[in-house]
Image (cartoon, rainbow, N blue to C red; front, side, top):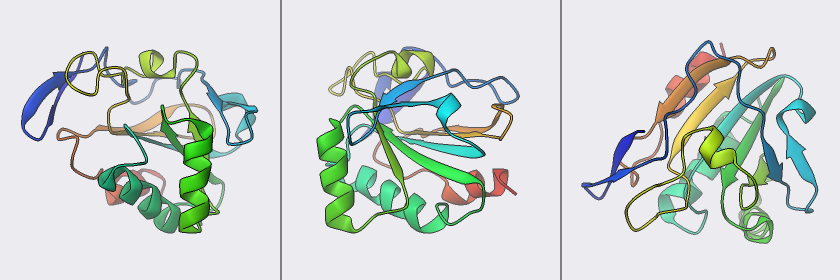
Length: 164
């Protein structure tokens, strides 16, 4: 279990992020058209941008930043993951003009538990913590970041450097 903070107050997740060098856990997310998105459906490298809710400023900024910084990379798919309903994720991306990220709702299934990011305590219990997982084309985890303060943005450059 990881301990992070929300505005300085400690909160816990149900587990830890996958270890670097390990196979990425399979996942089953819901796309904005309600079809399923599985890790095996994505070819190439994957950046999982995981966050509590797209309707908060920091989460929205991470979606915008990964759209501008990583989505243009060859052989790389950015998947923005939260427990928001697929409709909310689609609405946000449409309103922002973000066409280069894939959204994956974790409102069903065990993604949060499998990746160790579901909040176990605190006011966001049940939502996903802010984290980044980068997976190479072989399905191996090559970078992870559990953001220590939920209100902070992830380290975009470190995630992108893992792809080079």
